[in-house]
Image: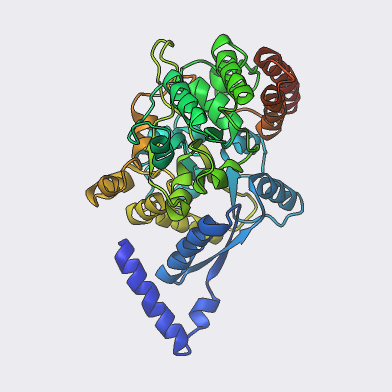
Length: 441
């Protein structure tokens, strides 16, 4: 059934219910979805659920916010132990290895789809997105939902005030320093800030330059992986940011996305952040802005390679009835439709998860009227991923990110050198990886 017909069918079902024929609605199978979205993203997610529920009468999806990514993951694990797990759990991308190791707690998406008898073709999903959540032989473990990649946002008015061409788009970190120096000289109190420092400036830095973040293809090839992000390239980059912090060119705003408000208000001129930040910048910024590729170091052979995704995917929890899983499969097909994905991509800045959604967005002229919104997908798909740039699959990675954040803060404050901080983060992180390995042999 087409997307339009499903909505028409849903509208008819609503009218019948209003006329007193609510018995069928009461018989609908309920599907529980726990997620981590609030604000505008939470509203858009709720609209997807509302549209799905209106499109058919067999299932009712109930979406519930369970806090931020870490809190939602912990809530899902605790609920499974108590036998009260939802059908669908939104899990941050760095939780992939944790979910894969949760024996008996998950039901892989490829199994859910196969058992449902509903159409499912894993080849329709963008390889650069879906690859993060598939087995080595291409079997989909979880459904890509909100996938993003880091880009550089630029306040054009700030460049103009600094005497620079407002259309300046620095491609390399050397060019970025030239821009930051001019901004600082013109009185900018915040030439550059960032969100998600580990994700942008270590995880994606490594992939973008085709150097390992960890051994064993960043964990894809086995749990006996070791961290490797203290090589010369990563040390050089963090040392540069540390020097910029000392000189007032880089202003640290916090571990998550605290820098977003500072950029949207006009306080900070340049901002490295998720492509999904586009919706908020477009809605709140009172200045013209540009979205450009993440800068790279041009003295690294082959750079830039490709960036990797952030965001989250939808995992199906084990322990439910067959009819409920058929409802999950039906809902996943709805979420994967070109119309739903194109709308989600265009309203959030998250990547479309299917080629059809990308093609539909192009045919609608969205990229022409919203310059820069195709940067993320081109940056991710311009080159075939390598073992260093497919993504990260590391156990206990949420905790490892906390260690990285702590060590990087030592660099920004000037209490540690880049080499000292990264060496310490690798050593401390490897201890967590060894515990994870022992628990999952």
